[in-house]
Amino acid sequence: MANIHILGAGAIGLSLANAFSRAHHTTLLVRREYATPFTFYHDQKSHVLPVEHINIYSPTQRSLVISNCFICVKAYQLAHAFYSIFPYLTEQANVFISHNGMTNLNEFKQHLRPKQALFFFSTSMGGLKINDTTVQATGVGETYLGVSNATASERLSYCFSEFFSSLLPHSRIHPDIEQLRWQKLLVNIAINPLSAIHQIKNGQLRQPKYASTILQLLNEACAVAQAEKIDIGLNEALTSAYQVMTRTQSNSSSMAQDVLNNRKTEIEAICGYIVQKGEYHGIDTPFNRKKLNQLLASHNR
Image 1 (tube, rainbow, N blue to C red):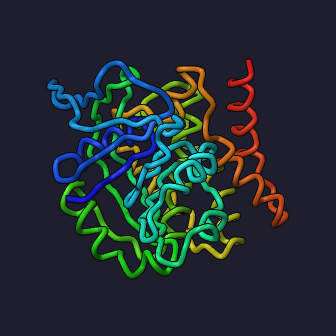
Image 2 (tube, rainbow, N blue to C red):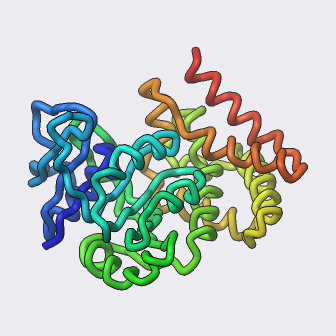
């Protein structure tokens, strides 16, 4: 039994807590105290998660020791989250990051000690946050684990067996972390902005009226990917996006939920990333820029 800390009590964080607590001592790292227990709802049944929760910002937590940390936060929260747990990492800690969109992982790699491992995992498991402490499972999805530094490569087999293959259905190892992150980014670009703006389920994006916009968004993104030396063709990107729409047809994307609840979205790490990299490479990205501006404007109303 390992000691696991999960930073982020959102849908993914609580879904992981549900899975990991079956075999490991699991603790949620949160930003405040919660009066009610964390609950997982699946197949019209609910159960209280057998997990502790710790307010990481409390001065009494200075003795915190973290060996395995799963950081499940929004892209714009990642830097703050990483630096909040960094002082508590053991010399041989494993850090697992997951978020939508793209961030610069090199910033975090350079701070890690030689025997600390950095992983990135991508998951399409579905979850809907019903309230502050309850998540409802909305789909199994697939989970891919990749490595982000040399130490992670050495521990990949062990960590995959210990935390992923044995506890998360449909888990796989991905051999190329950057390819994995770009593939996820392209799926996010196809699904998240439109589902958020129109407030529709993922499966509804398969309607013909959205096809042209999805095509244009991905065409721009693939051009930028090629300039970044990432080999993902437009046909591949479209196929992957529509497969995810089908598998998660009843799900609301995280961005759609953010807009519905008037929360900041990750659009700057999704369409905004394409716009930024497009400017760097001299590639025009009007469709991604339009969605970026629409989502930024909706949050600032």
